[in-house]
Length: 329
Length: 310
Image 1 (tube, each protein chain N blue to C red):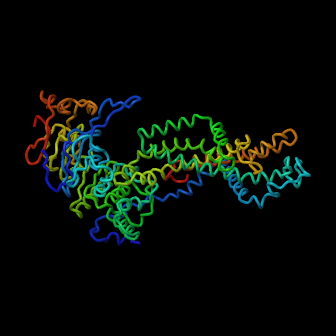
Image 2: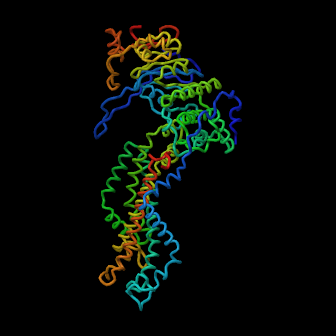
């Protein structure tokens, strides 16, 4: 199902993440929230994988499992060929230099009591990447420039920066360890549109200078994902329902959920927008506490058949590396 | 220092990155805003001035006090206030005013040491409890609740009667009643600060737990901690005075306000000032610390961070 190609930055295989729900005095486990169920995909060096889906579908959980902020309940997370799904904190510390997170909220992701220079330079100190104060200062200045900030600003505090600049600080911090993977968890959703474009361009530019830098770009903004990603995965209720090259996925959408999701995206072209036919799904997203049997999407799917409520459709190749999990395709 | 032109021409950039495409937000002088909010209320200003005056009085007691604290004038015991002894003398002929001035040293030093000790211990335990969560947190917090259920004066009395009488004994006896408050305060703060993404960012960068606790979490808990410490100065001074009044505090003949109240109350009908004056000193100092704490709480309100001073 998933090619175990050599040299991938990330391979996740049948990843499961269940969060226990505990109640009562003895904190007895009464149920599991199945945030991720059998998620598999790979990220190749220098690639941007877009991850889209509505709120609560598990996008963020995937990102946090990959950087091992969560210990997955089942399945395997491979980073640069090494299985890190059950590594302890001390082993992970070595690997964490090579992966970084950029968060959605530019206000809570930077420590308000640290100067921006200290924030950006923190990974250098943690991983002892510089030998002298001079080298440290030079490296921090370099990171500021790379992220489009003036190095004169290193002694300013986060509250003196605007949202877009704070997101640049986040990116500068992410770059400090010279990572091979940056998990961008909705990095542009909290910014206004002009800032969004600048941050997207910055991310692309950084990648063009370092051909091993890959991104997992988590977003619900379909246009941004189309713009920045080489491949796109669509998630619904803890599962990947479709994954393919970005152009192919947008041009030849197969999964009924992806079709509905894409039809909800307003088009910038007024003529095309006029013709846009919006598929409005009925019902609500089921709770991951008790997902429907079979295909999780079947209660809302316009094309559901009998077998959809009976067995979970596997992710299979519909030709040309376009994987889709649907009985009807 | 790299200039902006250098930055744009930096190697490998191709000059595409717009540096400073937007200006920095107008700098907010945090300190000036703090001062302005702090002194906005007159009562806080008065409290602050009184605290400063009493601290100065303690430091320069040798210069200010007309007599030594132990200097006896046995021909002149229980004297009424006059031009030599502005507040009169006590039963051993010691100048009351001088003893009150020297007594500020005991009040302040016991207050400061107690507050520092209880804050250090309580903060450390609270930090660990809040960061660890789970079973460790439950155990620590239930024990803290149990500690707080014991009436503080009774607890102080028990501890003070076990320990040696003296500054250290009093400090420990009072600190033991104060530190559970810090555990609870810091535990709650840590739980809320932990929710911030920068704590998760720290973990994802591979920071050690200690680094996250002391570099990221603790500095962001400081404001309520400072307020609590100021408020607790008053409580500590009052507790020390209570212990001294009950005879389990600072040993006589050292001038301590609580002990002086006790010595004086035997002559309450004849020379009421002997008890009232040190009592008033305690009241004024405790009140002033509470007002300063109140002002700090307003001025350190995180909702005001980054706002202009108006």
